[in-house]
Length: 359
Image (cartoon, rainbow, N blue to C red; front, side):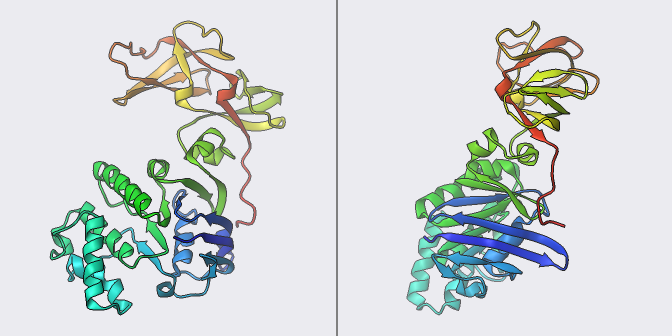
């Protein structure tokens, strides 16, 4: 285990800042996820940590040791690529042994390490197979085993589940998390999939346009997003445009007066509402700060839940998520119903400002 430190890490390509001034610490044994859309700088950050991309400026330390300018093979970091990058002509055992052979370990130690790692990823008996004889999930485990066989100080995962189907992805992400917890290895993973990030991480780093927008636990980012981008990217939200007219009062562009709990300066902004925090009734909702009538536009059946889209005004629409109970009534499209929520459920964000330093 080793602590990873990034200090003002920046990568520029000409005038374009792919990564700008990233500073963060990954604690020993922590599972940290870099989360953001394509092009946000998360993969470039991971490649700088791995040593495949040279930073323009800044520093990288692993276990207190400066590694900014070291080549990849001197960093003692295991990397699992998005495409797995297995050697097709080598067996599973030979793929896992590759990094150990490059380190010139004795043959007996290599064989023992390969057997131990196959056991860790539950692939005993598969050592003699070729990658093409394995399923996608098994290939992913081989790639993980190869990264772990060198006993790295740091494990780096670059979108490791993106090539798996949905059901297998859910299974493998649990396996990776359990294995990481068992080994206690410091891990950094890159993904654009918020569900993966929420279920696997100890902490999340949300990135956009090369900059860090917020760092925190799942609950911190979900309950207290720093800005509209984070609220939009972590979880689901409905956004209503308008202005803050006074303390606790937000007026939408459609003219709705809404009580909100987050104090921000007067001016234009948007109000974020989480679908599961809203209530729906055919009668006004007493006891809630906001209870507004609207017309049901659309009801979507999602299995465990129903999404009900309600039009509150000509320009204001919200989505209410209801649990799908066996004896529950399904709202009727076209019906007039009331949407209610407490003031504290509404988060107000000023108009977005581009991250400083990004061209």
